[in-house]
Amino acid sequence: MNLKRISASCFCLLLAGQMTLSAQNVSFSSNKVTLKSAFEKIEKESKYKIAYNSSQLDANRSVTLTKKSDDVFGMLNQLLKGTNFTYEMEGNYIVIKPQQKAKSQAHGKKIKVRGVVKDETGEPVIGATVMEKGTTNNGVVTDLDGNYTIEIPADGMLAVSYIGCKDQDIKVNGREVINVNLADDNKVLEEVVVVGYGVQKKRDVSTAVSSVKAEALAKIESAEVVSTLNDVKVAILGKKGELTQVLKSMKDVAPEDRPKVGQMVNEARQAIETALDEKTKSINRALRAEKMKRETIDVTLPGVKKLTGHRHPNQIALEDLERVFIGMGYEIVEGPEVEYDKYNFELLNIPANHPAKDEQDTFYVTKDILLRTQTSPVQARIMEKGNLPIRILSPGRVFRADEVDATHSPSFHQVEGLVIDKGITMADLKGTLAQWAKEFFGENTKVKFRPHHFPFTEPSAECDITCFKCGGKGCRVCKGSGWIEILGCGMVHPKVLRDCGIDPEVYSGFAFGIGLERVTLLKYEIDDMRLLYENDMRFLDQF
Image (cartoon, rainbow, N blue to C red; front, top):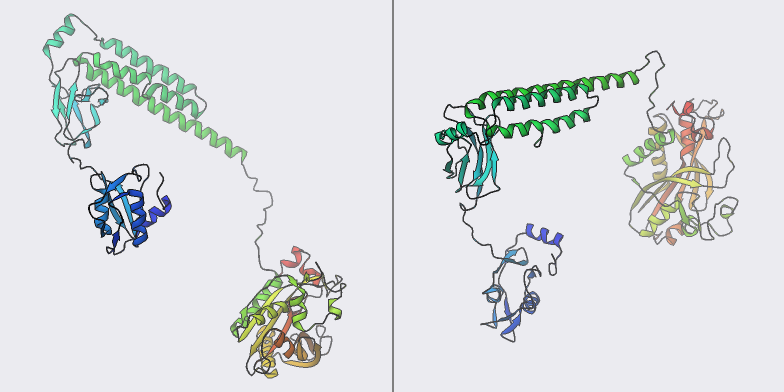
């Protein structure tokens, strides 16, 4: 259907909403309008929207108004007067819909009626006809136990009939269980005995039942697959099956013979169903045995080790590092690996003639686009936004044109930190790194600064820590010095602050950069960086 101004999906949502509505006045310049123009006028001069089914309502129909001005509801009453349409309020929408015709609750309401049909002796009547009186297509036949179920109007009438018995008409009167006792019709029985019209002999039906049973059992016994058994079940016991057809012919059996014949049919059905069940189980057992034979497991063969995944040593070190700085209030921030020259160099006080910008050190995509050589561009992007104060940690992969050896790789990872606030000093930097070193390498770890130079920090320093292996006494790890170079750091250069839109007279800050692979190698005493990337499970399984 086509709804005006509203789709079907939206319509469903509208029905869920409930709002308190108030009337609003609508005025027309003429007393003769079309429904479409009137609806548009109401929408324009009120807060309501009107929805209707254009296939049901002729919106181009002209309507003569008795009042040119009225509230929305009064105007709708005028517009829909004399039609079979009404309206309902759903939220802020007015839904035009056909009026529901009142129907009698009792008349035409159908119920399911069930019961048992028996003869004068109390025996179930098999194959008796139970019909809705006055119809030719609403009827059922009683089963082997005389049971029936039929759907019929609550105020309808049942017509029950069976050859050799008197017909009965029974009013339903809303009852759901109606048992019927049929009386013998002596006149019909006499005619059957004398004339024999349409009556089958007991022995004929018995012979047919025996024949069907024998044939079915033979087919079941010879079946090799379950699908064949299903075919036999349908052919014998289905609605149009052979045994069902025999059952239908029982209406022509003499009344005194029906119980015995009915018992014979029941026994035949039970025997066939039992044979079907046993044969199905036998076939399934054979199939299962064959499958087990094919799937036999040789327990003498060596077992297959189930490999389970675990974290890479780089990932373990990174998570430990991040945990320390997150505990100090830092936020983890990441940035793009393909970066602009502006953020990678210019905003970090690295001039155009700086050696770091040479092609032999940097992977350029274009003149202005490159693979980042550090994660410092993340710091520049954050400072440029001006959301102060800043306390961030930026881990990520970086790229440099280095030859692969035990300590270098063209692709590695850095973790850089940045703090910008009022009153930040070198003491804050040293205290931060000292706290990190103690939590990462051990409680007794100490730090010291050595003067250095970095374009984006002033003053700059190299940070050393006491050897976590020997405690500063000298060993193979620290090469006998007792100290290990760990990272570069310094106070953020005033020019860097100014270029990123931060007043260096008001704010100051510090930055540091940690090589993730370096601290991983140190922490786990690995002497070759290449081991981290060769995917040798003999090595990685140690972590």
